[in-house]
Image (cartoon, rainbow, N blue to C red; front, side, top):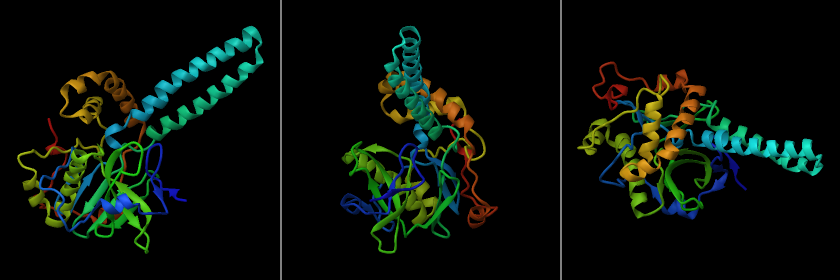
Length: 309
């Protein structure tokens, strides 16, 4: 029986479990290219000769849980509680206590879901240091998971779950090289399909090529696609406009669908704004910054100055 790690919004990754057959079948090797078209998928915070830093799997959908928990479930709680109290007071129908208790349980779920999204961190950065070949992952509890780039077991996760959403993960394995001890998840999420799996490989290839070849070769490889960095989220909270834009980009390439989904994206962007305003900006501990020092004359520094205007 596996236990859970500290990542994830609603549920966490199972750890202390063996690698599945699908995880073994879809393993990605750090020394072997898996794509000729690497792409960063608007996930980069910083890039330089020492490291590249990106956002986590949950960044693109922040606000979703807050809207579902803080909005929909709150409305259901209010309706259920009001009706139950009305029946209790007007008709003295004591069995109405049952739906009232259920409403209280729904309220507890509302608070839980809302606080899994809000009052946390604005994002959970992942940093790939190519000089010391280490990967640093900022955890939900504020700690940092550090693992060797070549020691992580990179694979496509999702074939074993019912949602059919896939993403790239790096597993920290136990000494037996079969038991998962911790998991790092990259930001891109795609439907499990031949096209979706190739998109995931394109995404992983960006970081693989950066770590194996450096910033120059990987930036050359993405051309003619421009490099667009995220707007300084490591030092300031995103604006409402950027949050709305980021949610809308989840349907990138489908303009009609983007338009139709505004009925969800617009209210979700307001909840995302609340989430970001109530959450802390993550700060790497000093020991991580010491291990990731940038040369003062580094010609490959890319940050919010390279964000879209």
